[in-house]
Amino acid sequence: MCETYAKDGTPHPTNKRYSCDRIMERVMDEENPEFAIEQEYTLLDYDGHPFGWPKSGYPGQQGPYYCAVGATNVFGRQVMEEAIQRLEKRHKEHIILYDPSGGVDNSRRLTGLHETAHIDQFFWGVAHRGASIRIPRGVAQAGRGYLEDRRPSSNGDPYLVCEALVRTAVLDDWTDFDWTNMPSKP
Image (cartoon, one colour):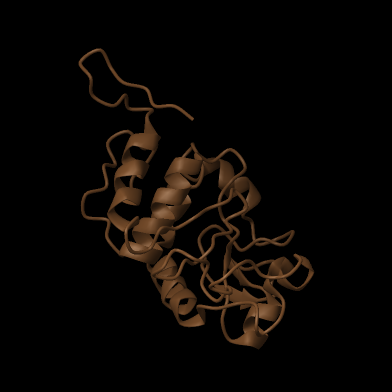
């Protein structure tokens, strides 16, 4: 993906990659988060290997790792619980940033019906497809694993979504976020 700059060399107001990149640089040496548009990410150990994977090589075939099923295949539960608490605290900011209309588009989808939490409420649940944050059943049984943030809209800017997740779940720092060109403010 590319960045867009104004004639004077400053990032264009639509250039959300610039701000996201600055936040990722802050955590790259220690955290090195990875994201998928499906809101999946891998926790890396200090040596750069996926947390809990064998240090010499790769784990077996995908089968037992699919959706992190199995107590010996998922790690990092304490990290996830802290992230959920932070995500709850910043729910309003995430709703604004998770769709290009500042939450207006998502208000039609996040109604509390049809396997969604209501846009004004935050809650998490184990295997609960109607929760804001879903913890897969295998993760809950293992006591460690990953989370699914079910709030981003399909037309959300992936840079804003990833930046919001890192600012909240990893850094817990919104002090320098620029709300100037956002569709609304918290």
